[in-house]
Amino acid sequence: KNNKENEFKKLYVHFDQIQLPYLYFLPDVSKTNDISLKAIIAVSSKSSITSRLSQFLDELLRPIIQRAIEPTAFINGTDFLQKLNVYVNNKKNDFNSKTIGSPKGLLLSETLYHIYAFHWQKLLLEKLSLETQFFGRCQNQICFTWNRSTNELHEILQTFGREHSNIEFDMKIDSSVQFLDVHVSNYHGTLFTRVYHDSNSQKYTLPYVVGNSKRAHSHWLRSALIRAVRYCTSVYDFNQERFYLQATCLVNGYSLEFVDHRIHHFFTYFDATSLLSVSNQDEYDKLHRRLMTYIGEQKEYHLKNKELEKNNQLIRLNYLHEFGVKHEFNKQLKEILSKNLVDKNAPFIKQQLMINLSTIHQYSLNSLLSQQKPSHPLFNKEKMFF
Image (cartoon, rainbow, N blue to C red; front, side, top):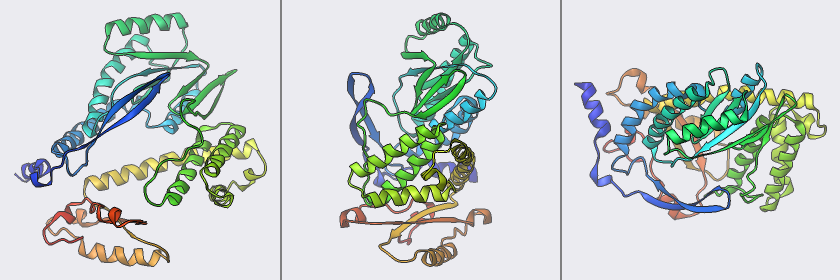
């Protein structure tokens, strides 16, 4: 009975809180010499009439399909390179990539898309007989290695295309290819990778942010440097990408002091300051290996937080902050919240909450008042003001 009541609460919709989703039309420049508009539906997790049903089905189906696609799924370019390096340690082949178009959707749509893609992916693997080859997919892009003739591959894919006419694909076969945002090349049996910049995209642009752009772009620069180290196997390619990132900040109005401070902090944090003055490949290889190893720690941290959020044991809060020391304030605020934010009806293990605090800067009253309150069952109870 309790299980049924819990499932009912998950699916119950408060009609007075329902809002229509926003519809955006964004340009799609993924195809060469062709620009089209793509409809993007932005649905709030709290306001959509189907959000609770979508979340319930997604929680039910995602773990099943995740286990099935995990061996051949790429999360991003870094995950792709990590798995490719593991494979290359044992075999050396040419690298081939194929792109297949498919629309993006909402939360549940992503899981349904993986189910659909897994079906034809399995059929394709059977056709190609790639049991001992490198094969993986990220969204609508596939990358795999091939040891037989190019003509044979073309014939297999043409036959597959005729049998599945609803699937359109473009194929590129070469010893150098671009997959996601990675350039991969096989030079005389040695694997080289670096960051790939699409020629159709405008160069030297910073991501658009709302609020404290200086802080957001500082985080972007640090993340871009980490990505550069992970992607670039050569210290020369890394330095070229570093210069590109520095130039991007300078072109967009940031001072040389702003850029140099963050570049120096990056190398100091990862104990690689010698690379600021000398391009030593051996020292760079140590930094490259360290940041590739760091991926596993990030995954564990992410999965732990996802599990805590699923069990309503993690609360994310933010508060306005202009200046001053935050450490002592954060410590006292966490103690107060931990004592008072307790669900007495929940089991003891679920009463142990983890609270993540962060600061924000508000530059207008409109942005302050339009902010939603934190999403957690404890804040949705009556007489709870937050």
